[in-house]
Image 1 (cartoon, rainbow, N blue to C red):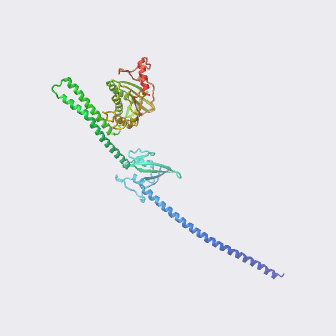
Image 2: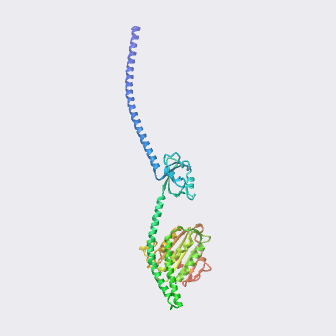
Image 3: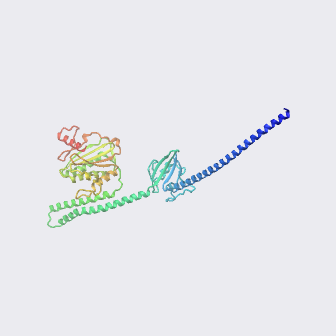
Length: 448
């Protein structure tokens, strides 16, 4: 084969290879074009879907922003250092005050007065007394608003969400309802009081007419005058009970030294029991040190005297009244036990309700006033029944310095009342007299 022939054959193979590669490239190009077209369509669809999703998210974001702006409750977001990073219009309105009146702040206002402020400093400045706690659940602002505060940490960020609810209207409604209830109760009580006053008033008028008789002797005038005074005092007691219940004002808290309080109380109780012909037994466990409680001295003494008078009124046999006063576990415990008929189980739940009474001459306010007084002092009252059927009223009041109010056996300061009504104080802890020992045992056993 000649050189020319070899060259020609080689060129033919080269052209054949070139044509085959060109066809393959053309085929690949067409396939690539189809693939590019498909991907372009898919990309366009994905882009369109993404734009729709973004538009929907933007619509939802705008909707949420509008809802947050128009929420009647305040929304505040604070960072880890307590600085406000976000606040809605309601929160701005709650804390913003211009010339003594609040001005609404809209979401599109340029200036947000709360942003960048420290939340603890804000509530301290805005509260009425300036002493609001950062962790408090309710705020009383200087502009008169009452805000309920709810806090919720945000799990995905070092932030905290604070929700503020305006409770001013609710408090006003509650006060209105409470006032209406008291007025309704006052009307019912006035009717009962008028009925109760009518009898002693008629008696007093009758007695006074006897005093006007020229033939009345000095002894008769004295006896009738005493009856007039009794009738007037009865009416005074009814009116005082009504005023105590209706007034319902705030308690004026003073520091009350427990030992002097107990002495004054027992000094008032003893004549009442002696006058009724009853027997008084007392047991004191006041410990040592200056133990005090916060409250109104007169109201607390009046509450216990009310229980004593109630025991005297319901007594169906010679009264035996046991009073135990102890300071234990940070609380003052006063137990007043009698040997009366007790309280029937079916009416125990209503015994402290206003106007509920089982006595013909009762107003149903005595025990209601006692319960109101105890509750206003942060304490509680309960009713128990002794083994002999008598009632035991227990008053528990918080002590101001509970660390000193530990019960300490103190028999030398324990008053033991004899059955003739005389009160004796043993000179030593040892009770050699069998009668005294038995009396003390009966008192302790009855009050357990």
